[in-house]
Length: 230
Image 1 (cartoon, rainbow, N blue to C red):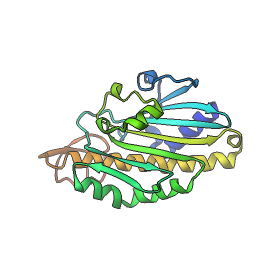
Image 2: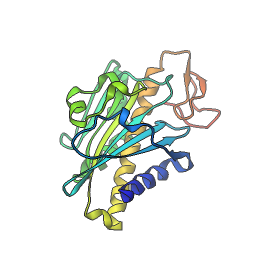
Image 3: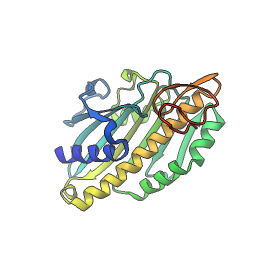
């Protein structure tokens, strides 16, 4: 499990650099305990979306299943709708109250590039869901044993990927896994940014998608952290 945790940490650090710290984050609040014994890791991210990630890791024969629950702490950020990315369909399923939301998700270059990379990773990627928690599909909730009712935020993401336990000892395989996680992180992060911006489009003021600074709704860049707004 230490090797898997290290792979996850290296992947997060590659994108978020010094913004990451780890903590337990009370993981059993957000997952129902099943028959498998699970190991949990919590990661807290500073000044980025999302701000918390809880990883649940369990073994199934020769496979290691990594479930990651992404929580956006800032209550000012919310979203209406969700998008589902799966290995089987190779298509993005999108539902929402805004046509702009649907168009942005399906036409965003970063999302499409990351999703294409993940679909090609047949032995790694399973599914990712991004959206507001009241849209979490019941069938996936039952399958994954996510206790979505206890999630304290409106905007969330859930992802599942699989690692070959035997191959994990190989450094080259670790690098392949890290690249897969990098694509997954970029996919989730960009989807959360779009959901955040759509939910704030009618407000006179908005909040920076990165640091949460209060900004005029027509701001192009954040004067605090310099991040381009959607």
